[in-house]
Image (cartoon, rainbow, N blue to C red; front, side):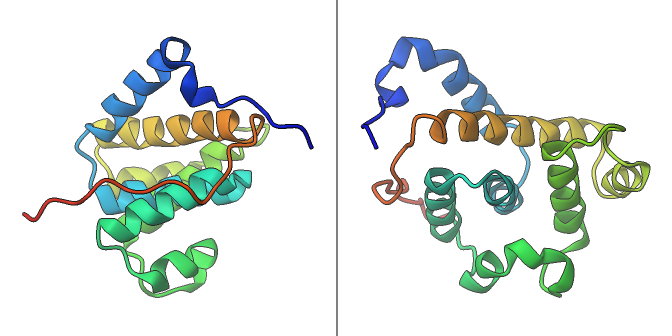
Length: 154
């Protein structure tokens, strides 16, 4: 396999994506929920680089190993909140859009846990990570080297 380019080295070309990322991460949604969504979408897309990155970020933010290990089977596990379940269902439906879009029951569940503005913000998280997955996968970004920023004590 030939070595592919590092898209991160192309700072000017990546600026719109980086700006979008900053805006999404500053949206006000709770970080643990955002990290779960980033992980789940990256699982669906098979993005090892993003899974490595976001599992480390989630752990650094206090996420438990158990919840990360079982995330793929979140429907069967008792330790995700209803808000998290609604977010994960939304993330899966948006990532794997079928011919009829997001099913009504997924939309209704999401609106029961999120305000309309929060749902738009959640959707932006899903759009963002699907975009990053589509940079990391084709350019074969190598997992294992990412280190999370130090978390500041509250």
